[in-house]
Image (cartoon, rainbow, N blue to C red; front, side, top):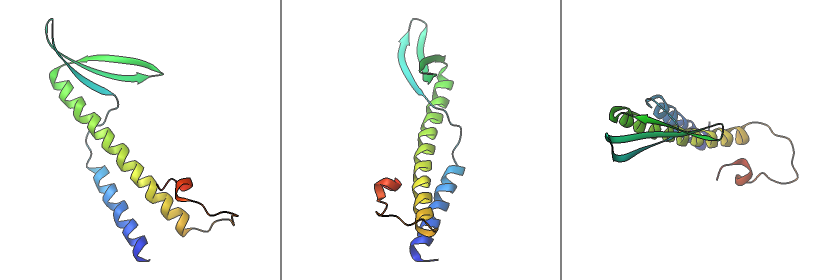
Length: 111
């Protein structure tokens, strides 16, 4: 295995380790809408079948959802990096058909 392949394997293993440490995840957005008529107002919003759905939250739920949403964004970032490394390895190491034009990094999604 050459140095570049070893580096890719190391990077991929680090990303897998980061992924394994992520806690609860959720999509959507949370808002602290400030004090309302009955006290603080926290809200979680997400899209379901192209419709916006909102849910009122307690302060504890708000804090937990805020962390879960941050975790979800981290998971998406890690997965995107893993996809790039996967495509890079697949297209560099496995046999491929003959092509008239070289595959660019943009076509392979490496940039």
